[in-house]
Amino acid sequence: MDANLRFWRAEGQSFFQRFLLWSDALDPLLLLKSTNEIQRTRLLIQNNEKTLSEPIQNNQTKQAFLLSLSSIHPDTDKIIPVLFRPPAFMPITLPLVIVSSVQRQAKHSLFWQFVFHTYTTAFTLVNGNGTPKAEEYSLHQKQIFLGLLAISYSACVGALPLAFMNRYVLKSSLMQLVVRKLLPAPLFGLTSAFTVAMVRSPEFENGIEVMDRNGKVIGVSKKAGEKAVMETALSRGVLFGTTFFLPEVLMYCVQRARFVKNPRALGSVRMFVIMSVLAGMLPASFSMFPQCGECRFIRLSQQSEASKVGRSMLKI
Image 1 (cartoon, one colour):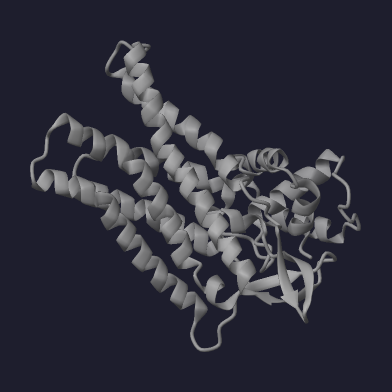
Image 2 (spheres, helix red, strand yellow; image 1 turned 120 degrees about the vertical axis):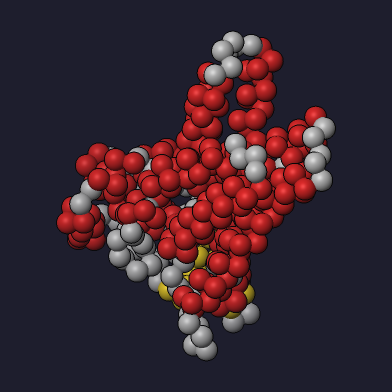
């Protein structure tokens, strides 16, 4: 079993444990580590004879595992491109979320949502499960094609309310409230979940590898693949749905209470609120489900338990 998976099994059993681990692993400073340092750290972990049956007490060893979690793809054992590592997710998506939330023109909204979904879909593709196999077609090419379809569809759906409102000149306060305040959160949540399901749909069709309790691969399970994709899509939908909804509620409370009297300062406060919500929701959404989960299946007429390949990237 990969070292990252062994670490999650030993250290990430509860939501609180996973939340603390992700809070450390998402540190943007980890992006500054060189390739040589990452490789040396990975080699050190692989040569370590520790079974990880108990929580790690040595801080240096734990830091080495955090660097491995944030930089190494568990299936391929390769270094993830820097822009698509988990610590890069917030610095890149934060400005896209802010820009997307303040657009008033349909064309501009379409462009920025296309950029937003392009990055999140590419992130999902790069960090997705590497175990599905296909002989009749190029799996990578199919995922790219499905990803482009999902990105285009999601961007159009997200910009449609603004286009409809501007086309028919609907300027009532109720319409403004619905289109600009209430609709973005569910639309971004649903479209984000949709892109995850689309780009990783081969895991539904081909399944992913499953292991026994000792980490030995015993076969491929479509049920495990379905579970992994659905959990990832749900966590992504919760992440961006909450990130677009909660700031609107908080800003409404700020304006009602008149905590900020200068109208020009409201923009800065809004950016700070969005950043705070995203910073809190990111590790929370990644921690919703275990990175190395379990599923039950029937094999040779006997019920068994297998640990699916639910590595850290499967839940992001």
